[in-house]
Length: 561
Image (cartoon, rainbow, N blue to C red; front, side):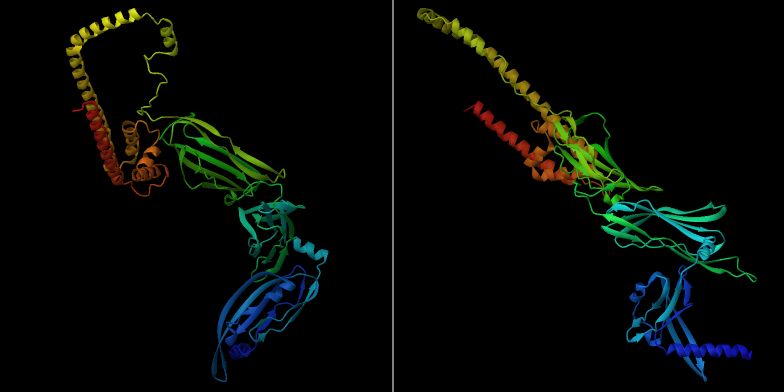
């Protein structure tokens, strides 16, 4: 019992002394081999608890493998007095950069400094290396030692071990100006090397350097223990390290002429239409899917396909859908761009070709992925009347007829005089005979015209009524369908809704909102047809008023008082 109390008192005294000391540095060993790792502990106590310490001098002769910190509180009792002690430990795992005598330098925090520590690093003998390799060793590899900026590098890390070991597998490499992606999940398997069985733990990464120069992939390190442990057998400390890799990263070649730099192993582009035939209908949407397949690049490097400037079409593009494929050969991407295209006029419309220049890293030259231009014949919407004005009025004399008349002209004065008197008599007789018949025909013509106008107004009113119902029920599909019929009936000379929109801007704005709702793919909110209905009513009233005014003017001109 007294022995136990004595040990406790000694520990408290030591803790008390440390609590009032400067910053302190300690290592577990001062003599190590070149494959060993050094654990350095820097302790700050009491008033130095929150001091910022400059650890950068360590990087001169050591590689920092790991860094952590922890806080502790203890109580010391000296001559019956109790003292609370708080301290913070900064713990570093260091690898010596060279063989021989090196020094852990003084570290400064505020006005306090640690004492330097002398370390002796011995070169391992071949037998020592071989004995360690029988327990644990690394194999690392890269698929390329020279790449272009942003080109993919595949980096493989394998840890081989022959017995039960404990320790943490290295984290993914932390590289400056380099994007690091996990290519494969952790793989575990067995391998036979020189007749001996090893367990293998493997990870693979895709590296994308973002700047030219030299990319240095540092050595991988493993620190752990092996053995079964227990009462009669302890666990022994082990460590392993790999070779480092140096990659040459080249700039974008001067011969590349593309707008966006795309270094890939493969790149293809093609498009698909939901209507295979090359004849479209004005006002009816058609979906176009443009698909880009690329191997060896991330989706962020794919270009944005802007199709807003296609003449003769309204274009509504959804955000691209990117599918990333990760396998043993690295990253691949398939990007699908869904575009709704609405023809705004009839006739022949040409969709220009799409070109994507890219750099083939396998052949080391520029290539261009192309979608060739496509020509479509766009038909007018059904029910739209197209007026064709003939070059010659039927029944009118042709130049040949006039020429024959001139040849047969009778120049005799008496002949003409007789003909005139006879004609006057015939005309007088016919006028008296047909006066009643003309009045009858005129009456029938007026009745027929009135019936045609009534039928036309009835048809126009029926279309407007159906369109009003669709707007009232907030049905965008039916509203768009009957809007085309309404245009064909009331504006037969208009080839597209754009012409009506230019004449009636407010109505045009509501029509564009309707199109955007139908073809943009955004159905977050319901469409409200009240504003479109109001503008249609205003335009219809203007049209009726204008027709009535023109009709009245014609009637007055034909029937003067």
